[in-house]
Image 1 (cartoon, rainbow, N blue to C red):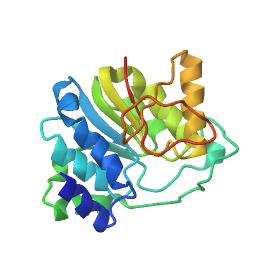
Image 2: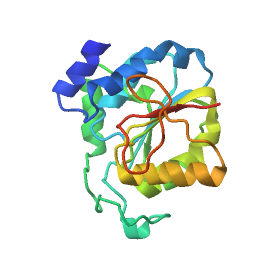
Image 3: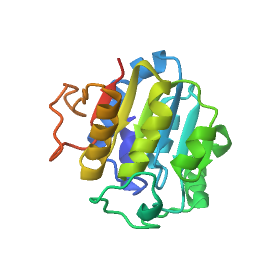
Image 4: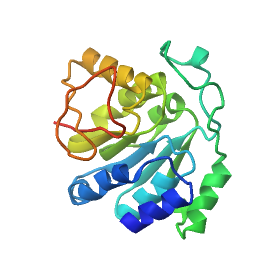
Length: 212
C-alpha cells in the first residue's frame, strides 16, 4: 500500500504526505475489525479516497465534498477571523474526481458520494456507524459541522483523523467543539501514535483521535 500512496502523491492527486498515509496503514487491521463505514470529508482530487477504497474493500465508503470549492465564510454557520480560504478556492469538479477513480480501475458506483457543503449533505446521509472519520475540510465552520453530524456516529475505538491540525482554523474548531462537549482532547501524533499535548498555536498535520 505504500507504493499506491506514493503513486497517488506522484500523480498529484493529493496534498497528503506519505507519513499520513502510513498512519492509516499501521492501523488498518484495527479499523477493519470495527463495525461501521468509512467517510472522508474534503476530497479535493480524490487521492485519499482512492487509497481508502483500495485499503478497505469490505467497508462502505462515503466521500463528501462540495466539488465547487470553499463555502463563502460570510454564509458559514460559524465564524472565525483566522479563516484563510475564500469562496470557491481549491475547486475540483466532480467529474474530474470520478475520472481519477476510473483511471486507476475503481468503479465509482461502489462509492457513496455526498455532493455539496457538509452542513447540507451530512444531516441527510444514511450513515449509522463509522469506524473511520477523516476530516480534511480546511475550514473552521466545516470542521465543527462535520463533528456535529458525525462524532456521535464513530464507534468506540473508532478513529477520527484531522488532516488539518497544522491549520489554526482547524485547531480552534477542534478546541471549541470538544470544549463545548466537555470531552478531553487526546490527539495522537501521526507518526509516533503517542498522545501529545494539544496546542492552539502549533500542531503537526494529521493528528488523530481514538474514540473512547
